[in-house]
Length: 195
Image 1 (cartoon, rainbow, N blue to C red):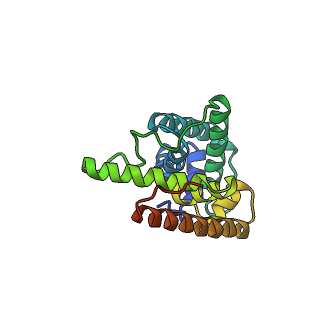
Image 2: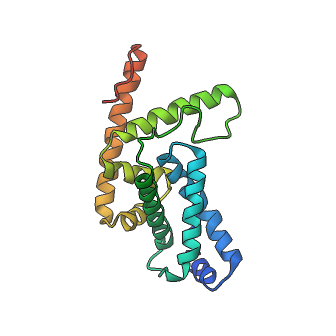
């Protein structure tokens, strides 16, 4: 979990050239950044490359960042990530599934059976998320894969925090309804309804 308590002082120290401060920031933001980008990419390799590009851009632009509120650094970081994702998909317009059939979001499952289960659940959940409107997809991915708070999501997407809450609430209701329907169909030996 990203710790906001020392964000401002760490950012200021990193801006002053304190490498240890930047490393602490990196350790704090990396899991959410990777989770968010990985949820949007078709392969782990592409996700890792894009995360590297984002981190390099953060290093280059760090002196330009101006702290505004707790979480503003992470919001700025995810704005960079969103722009890098948009650039990536402009350069690589071929449609890509959320996950390659041979990859999972969690690469460290203990057994092949558990890996298969994680893969199937990850693919199903991401497929259902892809059925949401683009704005709701973005809010859900930033919240649950990027681990951002609503205030940070609002800053990333340039929205009011209440609007983010409304999008998230509606998206979760839609996801619950779709997943319940798919589970019911699965129990009745029908194919999931990705419509």
